Image 1 (tube, rainbow, N blue to C red):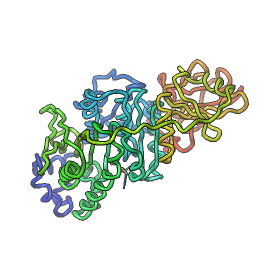
Image 2 (image 1 turned 180 degrees about the horizontal axis):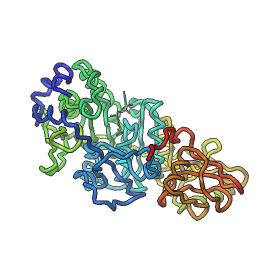
Image 3 (image 1 turned 30 degrees about the horizontal axis):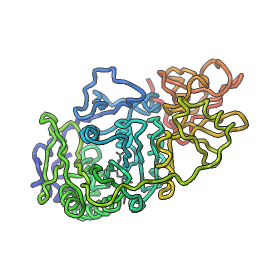
Image 4 (image 1 turned 45 degrees about the vertical axis):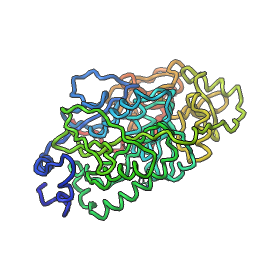
Length: 459
Ligand SMILES: C[S@@+](CC[C@H](N)C(=O)[O-])C[C@H]1O[C@@H](n2cnc3c(N)ncnc32)[C@H](O)[C@@H]1O
């Protein structure tokens, strides 16, 4: 890419941005360097390699080469998420603010698909904490739920709502992340095609939309709660100007996040309210463009609302007993039914779920266990990938790499069948999904919608 490939006025528009070094920035966009980073799922795998750590994220690592993630069964098992390194800064923000917050916390990721920051937030939470991951665009919800299903936890609710629907949920969340839709200049290096979309007019439109989204969700934040705001734009209007607006229009104060000078992150302050922001420039950090900031809602008037359970379904005790056998520590879970499907969510989230149900379109809550056919469970894919599945109640079939790829493609699996009935199909100890073992064949229950459709690379 050469200097002129940037959109007209783009570089000039950044001339006065804090820490912007034009030559360094242009050079960084000229290199052919590809930065690949992943974030491990701490619930499923621990770091064993000597890969270089992303300095601001405990579970983040740079890879020296970009492998084919599609043909890595561990990726499908939810052992890691492929995430741009700068985005992982939200982990550092979470660690900083959690130190002075009472537990447990309720967290909202308002603009969540495809789920990079949701899985990150989830990794920083305990099962007694709740994560609500929301996505406004219906067609983007499945990728969000797939990624969270792979992550495997049972303290997540996925919703498909407009930010304005959160207005009526008063003082409910301790932490709200708004990873706002933006003009996207921070992704120019990774995705040069994004340059065609950039214009000063679009920056303005994004600014207005960001204000609308933030105003809509503000009431849902508890007093003393934290609002984390991020974009992948370099534009002042979408970043520091938004902070000025937030601090002047709402009862919010800026929270300074301690950073290490070696990280190359630029700390900025907004013009009027002097609110702190954190800028990531390629060339200065090992990552792409990002802006992040954290604010706290001041304590003023009005208490925290208490949400009461709106009654509950009468559920057949016999069915509950069967479902319980498939779950570890089953008494820790609230079991409920949606149509014929059984679901489980950590017991402490029952009231929150009932309350959210009254306001929002819920697309996932906790873990879907499956349907009962008489005394038998037809297990759901979500259960296979979850951390709560009772592995003693079902068979497990370990697969090698080749067999795992056959399974993930829904091809015939080249394996001798051992046992009869529902079996978890595992790779390196992690479950990929279900198959039903029959005397002379295997029925592959890997979901069609997420199967690998491309052919494995020739060796
Ligand atoms: C920057 S992306 C989010 C990326 C995500 N947080 C992650 O880390 O994987 C912004 C998201 O906002 C959503 N979005 C678009 N318009 C919106 C609006 N008016 N209100 C709320 N969200 C919107 C987009 O569909 C997109 O999923």
